[in-house]
Image 1 (tube, rainbow over the protein chains, first blue to last red):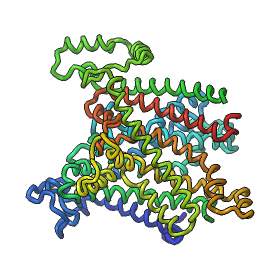
Image 2 (cartoon, rainbow over the protein chains, first blue to last red):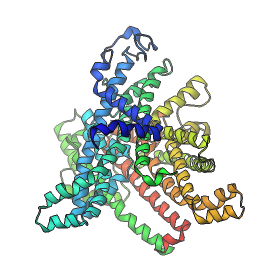
Image 3 (cartoon, one colour):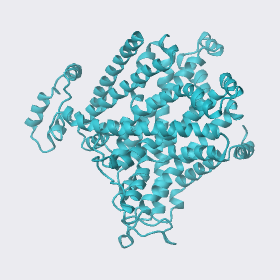
Image 4 (cartoon, chains in turn cyan, yellow):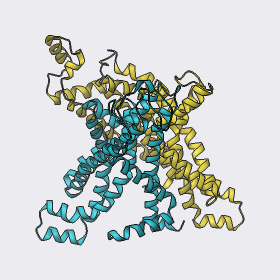
Length: 282
Length: 306
């Protein structure tokens, strides 16, 4: 697809799948806000102003202020940056290790059993439990939140790549590559990996909302991003004791989190429907 | 059938062993000195050495592993670092509270989810169908803890209708049950709808409709029975996840369950307690999966003869 066709494709997607396109717009807004956070935020997200503690929305502070008088809009904007950073790095880590393990398990028969059974065991636990365990082992920090969420995504990518590799390595062109004396590494990276890539990228986009949610959950439980860093989950944790006095401190971060996850989910739904011709007619 | 049960049962044993092994070795990765963590920062070097010897930490890892497994086989999960009580005693009552909450939630999610999914199929293409789709998408996207906070704010702080913390009466169950079930409810609704739509396209359904059986009867009786098989899988999986995923709901509503215990234990880095909770989660997940497999055999005779 050339770059020129992007607007046309986007337009026809928006016409056929308005809900998916709305999700796409939310996701785009989220990414732009996250990337441009320092330029967009009206205030320093950590600037304390105790005299305006828990002030409601006003022209100067459209989303109000928290218990320390910090500007909620700015904190939401920087929270988006934190969410994007954590989710993308965690999924990236999961993809990197998962793809490697999955391909190795499929390509080297002797590794298949041990690797894939290990992956099954990790998958037997809910994501949040795996993340909590990782934090219990490594301790609490932004870095370890990335690792904690990344670990859980390794088996998801391993399973996908394992299945793909098993079917791709049966094809004639891979057999040809092996017969012509290509090294294992070359076969895996130059013949098999490129053919897995499309599915891996789709998987990546489907897993991001879950990663965002898990990161916020960890912080909400007080075991994720340590305060005072602006993060949606820890903002909600902080709102616990103030919500009865000033509900906006609880509503704003939750709404941001929900809109972004909702956006990713409906975009994913729309893309899946658009790409699967069997579902089109319904 | 007996052979099928025995086979499924035998398959779950190595999985359980793997879970235990993984939990043991994962905690070998902890940076720092576990003996030092056990006695605290101020303790003398002799005290650290004594604990190291008492806990067997001066032995090679494999010896420790064998020792760990043999203690497990005797039902000994060690002692909590924080309360110094046996882990088994800490876990038991907490686990029961979590099971109660999860059972309430899965029953609610299944009954309401299957009903709504069936309604959406009957009303396919109408406003109601689209409305349900959007609402269930919201249900899947809504952070559980945020939903809990909003519910608690409305029903406890503003209206004073429901208690926001604890598990003393049936009224304490309402909000946590709803919260814990929300995601599964949305999921089961969508699952029921798509499974039913698939079955509705089959010949025997068309035959039933053609010979004049009322649509409600065809959907609710002829089709639903065959659509329920994939739904059972989802219900089973969701229940297994609920037992562990209840962490967040329990935290919001101060429900004294296993998840809340785990969060506290992680915060205090009470490793034996964390390990015990993990084993319990893992074991219950494996058992729930086993139960689902067995239920499969009951629902679909073709499976148990394979």
